[in-house]
Image (tube, rainbow, N blue to C red; front, side, top):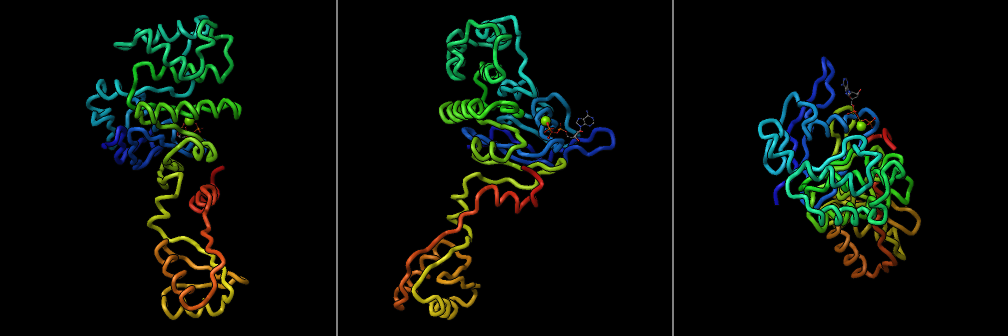
Amino acid sequence: MGAVLSLKNVDKKIGKAQIIQDVSFDVYPGEIFGFLGPNGAGKTTTIRMIVGLTKMTAGDITVNGHSIATDYKRAIEQIGTIVENPELYPYLTAEKNLIHFGRMSKNVTKKDINDRLKLVNLDYAKDQKVKTFSLGMKQRLGIAQAMLHRPKLLILDEPTNGLDPAGIREIRTFLRKVAKEENVAILISSHLLSEIEHICDRFAIIQEGNITQIESVSNESDLKQGVHSYYIETDNPTRAQKLIETTFPNLTITQQEQFIQLMLTKEEAGNIVTLLTSNDVVVYQVVLEKQSLEERFFEATSGGLV
Ligand SMILES: Nc1ncnc2c1ncn2[C@@H]1O[C@H](COP(=O)(O)OP(=O)(O)OP(=O)(O)O)[C@@H](O)[C@H]1O
Ligand SMILES: [Mg+2]
């Protein structure tokens, strides 16, 4: 399946300042993609370029194949967004706000409005004026509004800013639901790793206008292909080390008490267990050292973010 959102070598200069440099990434249907970076990294600027609020200096951005630069109308139709704060009318009720915004797009029915209110758990407050809403309720209504026309791509700039943990969890739950059930691609920016870790499937890190890495939150796919640190506990670590060194001379082994530690692929780990047990070394346990996202992240950024 093709990407819903695609950024290719996007640059943004304001005056002489290079705000965004060579940013490229793709977001796919049904995926929640995080855009993680500290204050001033360029998250909002990138989002503003995606939704056409500011022009890029170079590169291209397409939404379902339609370029924001040359085919803006077709591209923007597919997007639902809140950049910074949702625009809501405080003296109208939640439902009346959605009716009002629904009139701005084609084919928004009363049912769409009710479905969206239910999705964001505001069904119970639909007749309440927005000025009485908590921040979390306003944020949820803003997301309902952004999704009224059933966009293929939802873009939210720091959607959980200022919310309490319960509010954050609520947003997380329904974003997952729409991504999965409606196959919507969702781009969310945040300066909090913990948030990205809990909401997103993949994320890009942006620092000073540059993407420094793109990766999956779960490292299951890495585990299938990559090399990881294993600890193997045996009844005879010295003999285990000798056996492995003779059979696999390229591996580096360190001994730590009853454990030997080495970097292996999954297949190699299996071969090593077979080697040891068939040579009468008793294997008590094989421990895969899983690095948490936070550890990987700090390694990659030298702790530049929290
Ligand atoms: N109109 C502008 N003129 C000059 N510089 C700008 C302008 N808009 C943004 N910048 C600069 O671009 C950089 C990126 O800003 P941006 O708002 O995109 O960051 P951000 O990642 O969204 O930060 P935050 O987490 O604080 O929202 C900052 O250094 C900012 O000062
Ligand atoms: Mg911002």
